[in-house]
Length: 424
Image (cartoon, rainbow, N blue to C red; front, side):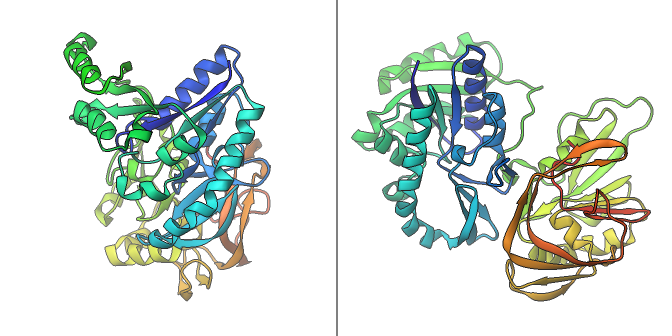
């Protein structure tokens, strides 16, 4: 077996990432040498590879599904939104600058060569490459400069499957409409459809499946059921509902432990909190307003792609004061750790100069132009621990005891670390 294909979705969160992961695991179990690929990802949930590069967390998960070590080649272009208008651009694992939506459109063609050469290398070195699209191929306003959906498919001559989410309704219109708005050359590459998140008796779909094939000339190749117990890493922060419970809490032996995770506007690597939600009796909830901290046993300040901006949001919403007055344990991770400091000097990310932190740790932070990307390991609490670091901010002064090895800070009540994945 040798080849490649592209999985596109009618919408974001249609199930592209999960389907790619599932196909990778299925083929790998058959002994096929398979790898994932996403030309361009937009996500603040990222992962650091062993060679010190940064990729989307979903591609790291897909690599694990294929029994492969995550590689920067699996996600050559990563966009990390820092605001509604700008994103940091990461190419083959390394940050290369910031772009606006309009300036990135002009830059896309420069990145297309990188995308295609990376895909060519994967196709030459592996039997099968399962590619994932971005957003929807029906975004025809972006088609001229597209490098992730039909633009990639036409240049690399990839057969395309389109997956739609039936749980939200209108799936037949979504599938038909996606093909209908494409031009003839793009339509020719669409080989079939997949319907995702179906509940009930699949026989009820048969009339619609037949009519969709009659209208488009393409079959529905599979109907995937809704699986309540399926819980994989979210692609990006949009998957996390404000004031929503994370995961599926299991009953406690005695009492519930209630964890409040601050749902920052530019939250990044929120998957850190999901590790806590795996424990029986631990209820982890995102919160966006101060009253939600009143009955919490632990408050977590997660990572942020815009530390200073999100710190300002904490003050605007009253959450900053609520965190400072909270008398229980507080854990800050990466950007959240930086917010707990006394002083943040940032001429790199926000270019805001000096900003007062929450003052719960006697630590000063200074942002550096070069991003730290690392996969450290150590022994903590008599156990081997590992993590990964993705941050511009550096500790330049601290009177606190380190949390892990010589990293982070720890007081009797407040903990801070730059290590993501420590709780996993």
